[in-house]
Image (cartoon, rainbow, N blue to C red):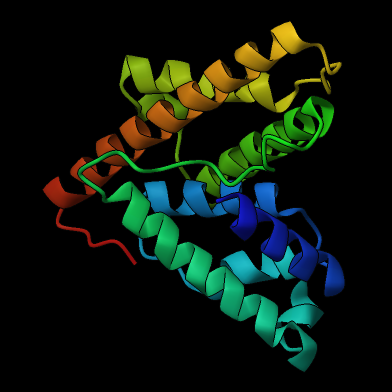
Amino acid sequence: MDEIYELLNKSLEHVGALMSAAETHGILCGLLCTSQPFSSDIWLKHVLGETAVNDGLASQCQQQLVLVKNYTLEQLNSFNCEFMPLLPADEISLSERTQALGGWCEGLLFGLGLMGIETETLKEDTRGFVNDVISISQIAPASDEEELEEDYMQVVEYIKVGVINLYEELTQTSEINGEVNG
């Protein structure tokens, strides 16, 4: 995932995207977790901006985004719980990774909001997770102290498990209602 993050982040910077790879992936996860059909154009317009979607220079970036979407959907549907939020590599400073994690969480919340998910309708555990994501989205960049590294890794693991649970809850609800993921 580290290489995917770097390549996508550089591509997004190159086309003047409105957000980083972490935020972009967070939005995508919010959209995918709902299992409601959505047009990729909605996601692309929020990430790249209205004009960039129609810009030929952005086509390579759009192709990368579609690959990330497909890869993320495979991870969410994996029996081995392979999902990981798209974040910078461990070699990057803890401060930058913490900032990216906050952006990823903002993206997740934005994606859920775009799909009209209301937290009151979620099960108590999942609602608690979404409330925690709200808090994590406001996280301040951490100093690069070694003891904080383990805290960061625990938060990332919590996000991973929480997103899988959110995805399972919302997709089961959709399957019960006869909806199909788009």
